[in-house]
Image 1: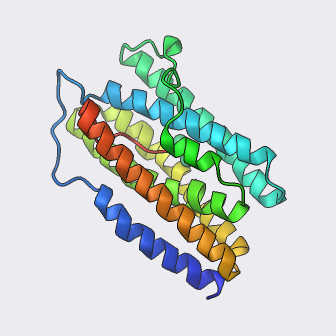
Image 2: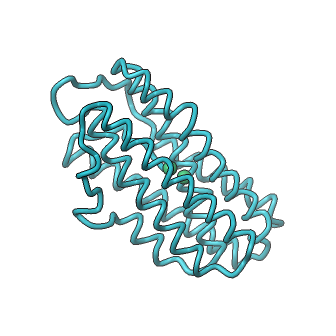
Amino acid sequence: MDSEAFVKDLDARNQELLRRLAPEATLEPEVEGDLSVVNLLKVALKNEIEATETAARWLVTTAEVDVKLALARQVGDEAKHYRLIADRLEELGFDARRFDPLAKGYGPLFQYLDTLTTTVERVAAGQFTREAIAIVKNRQFIEFCEAAGDAATARLYRETIEPDERHHHDLGRRLLLRYAGTLESQEAARRAARRTLELAEELQGVALRTAGIHHAPGC
Ligand SMILES: [Fe+2]
Ligand SMILES: [Fe+2]
């Protein structure tokens, strides 16, 4: 199929799997306990620093100039998100400056993305798919913040972070249209997208079982 038909098909497959990441029911924020805006923003810091670094690593090992520039923009955006979230955590009374989100190491999704070497896989996994996951998760997180009465965090996500993540997803779409023209590249892109979604689903399950955390924002 041509790249336009391919991207449409990949989007439909992704959306199908993304439905599994939607919550079963509206969840109640806990005043005491693990499920709080502060704890979810700490998870967000880890996501943002990992997204920054993935894009930065790829930037220097990608040949195509348009992809380099898309990755450079993403590095800047994800680093900006980190700073904004850290500032919000400070307002909420958490000392984010002393917090190292990588103290326990990089997560499985970061490690998987780091193994991808071709442009089409990187764009399919890291931008088109990871950022589609972020759009779903951030929508859930915004609802969570509103239910928790935290209008300022909800606004930060709705007005600044979410539009950037959407832009990253759209960059992925544009680059796939350009680079996923052959059967071989389409198969590689599809595999990378599927693995990214599988890992996101696994990670969500693990976070829920081990830390009681759900509704963590994406990146
Ligand atoms: Fe992003
Ligand atoms: Fe981000």
